[in-house]
Image (cartoon, rainbow over all chains, first blue to last red; front, side, top):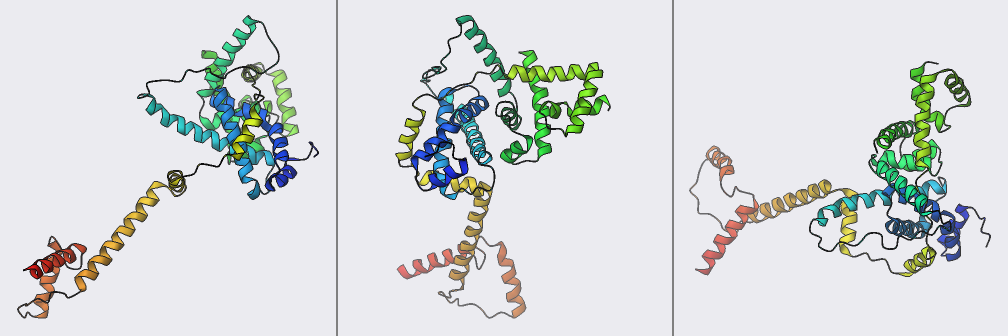
Length: 191
Length: 164
């Protein structure tokens, strides 16, 4: 099968149960989806990987009902947004339960880095520290501002595409981004 | 172009979302205006800083693990289905439906049981106006006529008299 097939044609094959077409689609989008979730939810790799897999499972299940009305990536990112927002709701509920939790799972398990490069320990430390500061600043933004900002900054989507994903108007996206940038400017300066 | 309107459009300018003519106008304004340029530089600083956020790659097991999950049957018991229904139509809507069903069932059963003349009373003959007045006063009874409570009481008293 041609690996260059457009997403919509792959979806037609996936709807017929073609696992190889599904694998091509997953490999094409896994890194961008994973990073979108990772940045939006604030740096939990294991959780981000699980949620990215959940997104692809939904794609597999919804393939039969998929109609190429909108751009495929808009449809895909909508699933991501829904899953991320559900996850935030669930984690808020879990915060209540944490009061009663005796054995807490240790964080950092399965958090190996798979990038091939090996920067110096000092550089690694600095970049991790900076990354942590940015993540914290992002997490303090309201959900819709954060999602709009992540989609613009890291996925370089147009305002129209972001509006399609967040189900709002282009002018709403514009004002979300203005506010997000202002907020972030203050938060990053403070941190 | 005035500084105020320029500063409102700086974010869209940075994102390349303005029309070409506006984009050019803003560029030329920024060349000549120090305070607007400073505003833009701050925005740019935020944008560059965000670039410092690390990028992660999916592990080599990402697809194999996903393929395994595809073959697992989806767990969907009664509780998740109910949760899904609740999320879809909302708790207030469900509460209203239950309330309406309860009221309808109560009044149906009540009026049915009360209408059945199982226990003909040996009443004293009264005039129409008097009976109307007495009937209207009975709404203050613990079990007003035509309600489920009255039906239940009449049934209970009938069973009691039968057992004697």
